[in-house]
Length: 220
Image 1 (cartoon, rainbow, N blue to C red):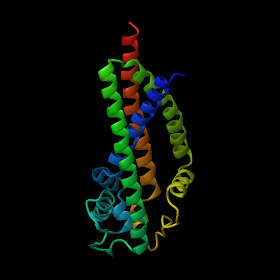
Image 2 (cartoon, rainbow, N blue to C red):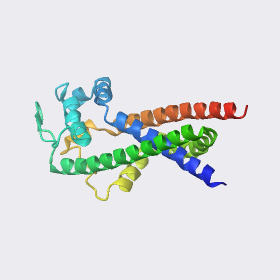
Image 3 (tube, rainbow, N blue to C red):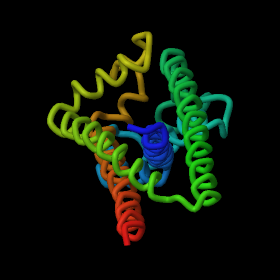
């Protein structure tokens, strides 16, 4: 395999990584999606708290993770202070992970842009298209595996996710004392992960169709 094809494959991997992290970042911090999920699941009534409390509590969390706020301090009707010290410590880890993921996302998009500019300069799109398709196959296998794992054994998937990305047990919360786990039941994360996997697959597949069309055009 030539150096050009290897470079194109790495470029394709970077493109799909950029897509993966962009979609994940958007969906994981989409307050509107959480609001809709809370209303649809009638969670506030099941927790015996005011209707807007889960949405307002989630907003405190999302604002902190995305950097819109530097604190998770806040009180809400019916529950008082929303988050305790353990929950805040865990979200500090989550915020650090999010920031690292967004830095990698930005770097991946820079690689993507550099590849596109180089291909435009040389008027050579075939290598990039082939590299994307080859990288896409690798990502497809991985995403299919993760999606199947999440769909058939989400508790095991979610536990391994936390053990991989966190080096402490702060993510092990107690529903009796930690409001965060009460507004973030496993079903919420299951629905979110499946949505992310499906959207990543759809966007990456669109890129695959474009790449296939480019290859067909180059062969004429």
